[in-house]
Length: 85
Image 1: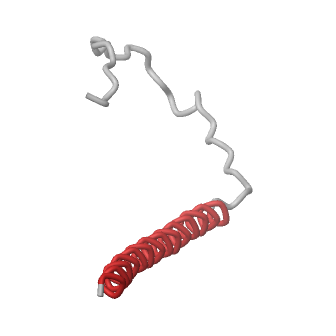
Image 2: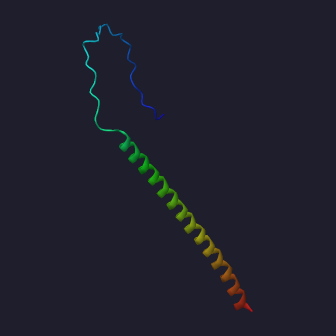
């Protein structure tokens, strides 16, 4: 469903002949790739850690809210019983 549908193209074999003299070797890049990879991994790790911390805080707030609601219901029922006596 989410895969792109590409048109079917027939395979046409290449008839041209290549000789080793036609192509010069590609110049190598002088920039190292490792720093960019490590920055990406660090950024992903930071996003994951922040997500875990925010999820834990949200769970703590939800548990606290439920606890306060239960305590309010219990106190209300105890106060209503005391007023009826």
